[in-house]
Each structure stands twice: as C-alpha cells, then as structure tokens.
Length: 452
Image (cartoon, rainbow, N blue to C red; front, side, top):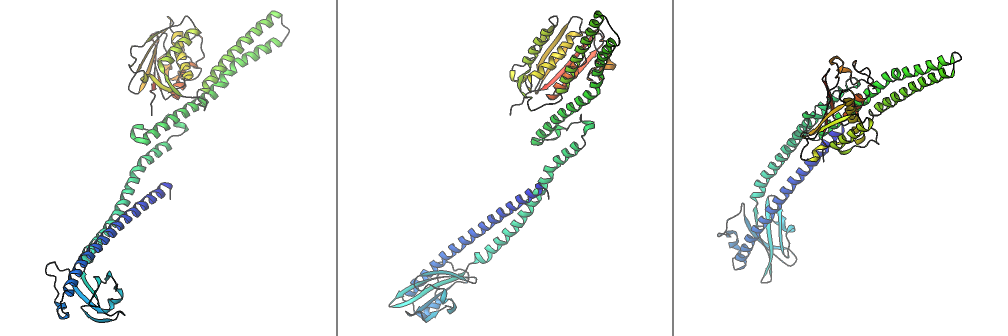
C-alpha cells in the first residue's frame, strides 16, 4: 500500500470516528432530554395523586383515582404503599412488590423497569408512612427514540459510504493529472531533452511543478548540449594550433638555423599559442555556461540597465562600434522590466550579440529595441550587415561554426552559442532571422520576474 492510500484510509477513519461520535452525542442528548422531561411529567402526576390521597380519600377510592384535569400518559397508573418503621409493607394499592427495593423510602426516586417509568415520594401523616407514586410508559422513548436510533444508524452507514465514495473519487481526480504528468516525464530521456511538459494542462501547484520541471529540463538540455559540443569540438579546435606549434618547433630543430630564422619561428609559435589561448578561453567559457552551480546567484535585475552596461562593454572593446538604442517601447511601470537572472551572464550574452552586429556591418552600427509585454521582456538587436545564408542558419548554434561569407573577419564562432546558452538558462528564447546582404535580427525574450 503506498503512502497516499495509507493517508487516505487514515482520513476516512478519522471522519468515520467523528461522524460516529457526533451521531452518538445527538442520540444521547435527545434520550437524556426525553428521560428528564418525562420524569417531570410523572412527578406532577405523582404530586396530584398524593394530594388527593392525603386529603381524605379512603383506600377504596384509590383505584378510582383519575387526574381529570391533565392528559393521561400512555399506560398510566398511580399507586400507594403504607409501611411500618421497619420497612415492612402493611397495605398497598396498584403496586408490584418486586419494585420495593428500587424505591427510596425516605425521599423521592425516579427509575425505569422494562418500558415503564416510575416516580415515587415518601409521605408521613398521622404517624403513618406512605410511598405514593405514578408510572407510565414513555411513548416517545419506546417509539420515537427507536425510530431516531434506526434513522441515525442508517444515516451513519450512508455517511460512511458517501465519505468512501467521495474519497475514492477525489483520489482519482487528484491522481489523474499526476499520473498524466508521470507518463509525460517517462517519455523524456537524454535523446529528447527538448521535449517539455504542457504547463497549460495543469492547475495550481501542479502548474508550478510543471514549470519548475521544465526549467530543470532546460538546464539539463543546456548541460548535455554543452558537454556534447565540448567533446566534439575540443579535440578538433585545440588540435589544429597544437599541431602547428609542434610542427614549427620540429622544423626549427631539424637543422641549424640562423638567429633570424629562429626568431621568425618563435613568432609563429607565439601567434599559434595566442590563438590556442583564445580558443581555449572561449571553449571553457562556453562549457561553463552549461552548468549552473550553487555560486551562480539569480536575483531580480532590470534588463534596461543590463543593455546599457552591455553597450559600454562593446564600445570599450572597439571605439569604432556604434550603437543606436530605441527606448520608446518601454512600459510606464519599471517593475515590468525586471527579470530573475545573473547580471554578469546576461551582460556577457548581450555584449556578444551586439558586438557581432557591429562587427559584421559595414557601418559598424547595431540597432537595439527594448520593450515589455504582459509576462515577458523582449530585446531586438538588428544590423545592416552581410547576413547569413539561409542554408547555414541551422548550424549557427554549433560552436566554432562560421558562415561561409565571414572570411576576412576575425571570430571563433563562440558568441552566438554562448549567448543562447545563457538565455536558455534564464528561461528565455533566442531567435535569429537573417537575409544575405540585408542584415540579421536577433530576437530575445525573457520571462518577467514574478513576485510571490
């Protein structure tokens, strides 16, 4: 039995115990009220009977007692007993001697024998001792309370069945979306990490769970892609400059050289080593963005400030780069520009894209537009440069890939994959549209910071 079924049974048991106690309390309260009220009515009839007897009625008249001015109870009887100081019965009328032990000989007593209820009281007159009483059958107890008891038992049984049925229904209705989510999760493996749960299908906490799981999948997908790209590209990209360095060193050592020849060889080795250093740094930086460690803190940051910081970074790298920013689409509420992220990583992503836009444009100018919708922030970065051939767009996120029309322009093919990794880590999307000879547009969307 799983934990959920065990808790469900505990809950049903608690409800059944509560309902049973509630039903028992109702029945006890009504029964107690019925007894108390009926004894009061018997006390009244007993007192009237005693007054008539003690005011001069003869013994022969006692069997004719009739309480004419009040309603007779069901199977009502009045009786008296005369007894001596030793408790021995001298005479009685309408009294059953087997009840003598239940009677209080010095005061009042109320008791029940079978279906008959009794009320008695001790009286003394002319040095004689009397017990005068009245008895009747409590019709409410014998009939109505029996009906009420049966009704409550039936109600209790039906209540238990209803609780059980509702519990089973609630269990199925509650588990159904969880089971659906489990089936969807089971279909996701390392070969299709791009698949996501349909968040719109779930409500409440399950929607938050699906959202959290999708974010985790995004981080896993980024890590897997980074690892795959690192393995597939590191050997090739690092092997080329290393081969060049080793080859030039072997060539220089193959025979005696002049100082000038050694100097030229060393310059080539240094150039290859610097090229290797830049590639290694770029590769390690790309690999690092695929893993979010505990030290990588995400905080609410304003995306307009990130854009301005990225502009300053790009201009510091090359003072010939120009950047035109359009802030006309900014919302009145500045809080809608906040995203949950790491300012350093976001600035790195944007500065790479802006730098590419400037680098591949003849006028060295990048155009930026920034705005916000209901639940997301968007950034458009556009250039009027050389563009990317349409057949090569599917490869632009491969590390070290460079379009066929970029010869003569420095670069390593790291900036765009790096930027996409960072945007994905922040739960956003990055899209590239390009036309050869007209330019390239990069669309970035990031989810707005949600305050709980």
